[in-house]
Length: 189
Ligand code: DGI
Ligand code: FE
Ligand code: FE
Image 1 (tube, rainbow, N blue to C red):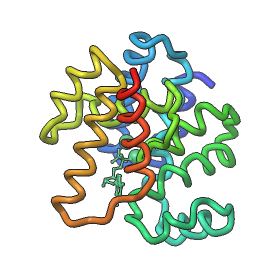
Image 2: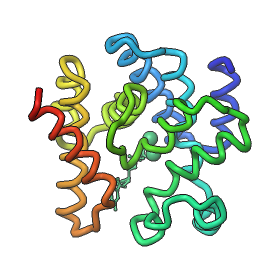
Image 3: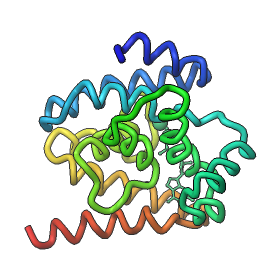
């Protein structure tokens, strides 16, 4: 699928603001793919569709989680987490994408997971540092992303966990598992 076709499909699913965010993630993901020797075409498509399900009604997402037997734990955590795995399902079903690397990059773009692939890391970091993001700490992650994708990813997850804790929000276990996995791997290096 080419870029313009993909963008036209996703535009219908998103608000103007979220569409502009998507373009930012796309451009950032391609840059990171070139920098870290991933497939820029896969990065482009995964980025374009990463927030495909962002505006689906809560009830529809809940039904998909139950009926498609996605992680039932999702239902007892922040519904902000749902659009990632539900998005992977819908992008396959409605758009017809079948590339498992692309689908997994969409599936894990919010929580991460242990043993993330290069493409999954790129989409996670690109989502965090795209030029439209302005939260505290983002500039540090942008700088890290020029040197080490793993260091950028660890910092982004660290910031997300601290942000949620400050708001006294529960942390999805996969987010911690992702952080632990990355940090443990650096210990043995
Ligand atoms: O969809 P985006 O806004 O572009 O970014 P995203 O997919 O990373 O979603 C960010 C939202 O998800 C944000 O509101 C925080 C929330 N989130 C991320 N990780 C966790 C989480 N919420 C909980 N409860 N636990 C998490 O581990
Ligand atoms: Fe998202
Ligand atoms: Fe996003």
